[in-house]
Image (cartoon, rainbow, N blue to C red; front, side):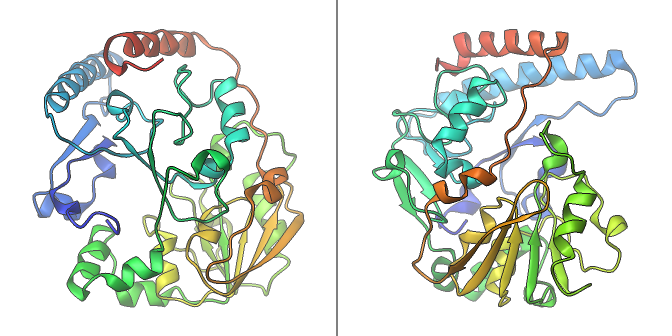
Length: 336
């Protein structure tokens, strides 16, 4: 939305209906939902609904491919984006992953990402020529010729007041709400509860240990959008940011002094004078950085903080899923 002035004339793709912003529905912005029939009580209806969704997915791909001149943006490791990956596809930043090629190579080798493709995800494949980045870290060599750097604060200031209000409406917020999340300290959490990680700490004990290092009750907690952990229940004396609010918007309306994280890229995304405290998976302080506008650190300096995800146990469901991905690669993705 900051990069493309025609964002309201863009077609958006979502995995499920609950991801679609209310603003899109109210203002006639075009969108496609992949899984429209997943909410059924009976197993038979769920299987039938999934089959219908898959057929619609194939039809959708055929129709979009028929458009000769189009520009596609997005995460290049989604089943929704795979069919449209070519040298005109623009990859959009997906966090630390776009700055750590060694970690992406490992995650693909254990099958956690990539859907079985040899194609290098997160914009590292030679076929990709454009990657939209915030420049949160120094660019790895593979990104130098591809990167389109976006200064979030500068781009926001270039927007008119009406344009800013439209973008805030997409996230169902306004200046007053954003400014209300004011604090000197912010904890940026991750969705580690969704992965098989080698750590003796649970989501609660990990962050409880971290919070003990700061004034009690004065740390603003920003939950990761994909996390299912209930921070309000487990940390009732702390202010919890409402889910759905991007941290980049919060930073534009607040002057946060200390950002606390394990490996959240959001801590480095918006330029400013601040301190960043980085912890390991066991809640131990590992590194502290001072940042200022125009200053970027080398992501390799925090490589030791990137959690080592364990390979999942192979199940029948996973085997069947991999066979389906093989079929998609051969018939409609056209990437190896």
